[in-house]
Amino acid sequence: MAADNGPVPLGRESTFIRQAVAHANMRHHRGRGRTIHLRGPTPRVVAVLTAELVAQLGIVTTARDVVMTPDVLQHIVDRRAVVSRDDVDLAANRLHEALAHPCYLEAGRSKPTVWEVIGFVPSAGRHVLVALKFLRASSDAGQDAWWVQTAHPFGSKTLRTRLARGELTALGSTSCP
Image: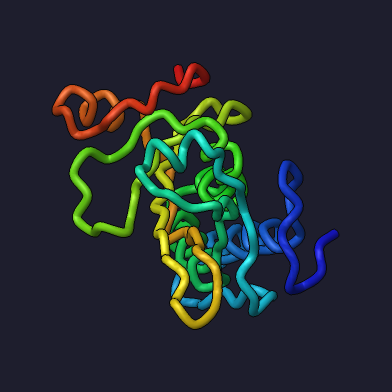
């Protein structure tokens, strides 16, 4: 198990995410209006981008780790808990799968440092949209970094509609249905 300030083990459900899903489920069944406070004040590594995906995004960097803050996880859990526990699990716990199988990219970006990647989650048979923000290192310290801004399930009907409108660009992954 990872230390409180260390990365989340990839490919396994972390305690951090399990707690978020459990809290979301409790909130869903007890009513709305309560705030879920998640443990762990530090950001966590939730996925590692492939060099191929980073190149397709048009970024030259050696940064590959994707980091999520507790506040972003809180946002994802709060928004998805209203819909279903499966959506919370998909959006909060399977980002590493979605980013390992990127299928599409939003064609028109409104923010130059944010990319919305739609990836396929084989274990669930569904797609997830992950909004990634890229931050260049400041000149005085630090490293380039990828951050999760949000994530949510991306339904098959929405996928077909957005593809027909030309709003998505295929990334050429062979693992996409």
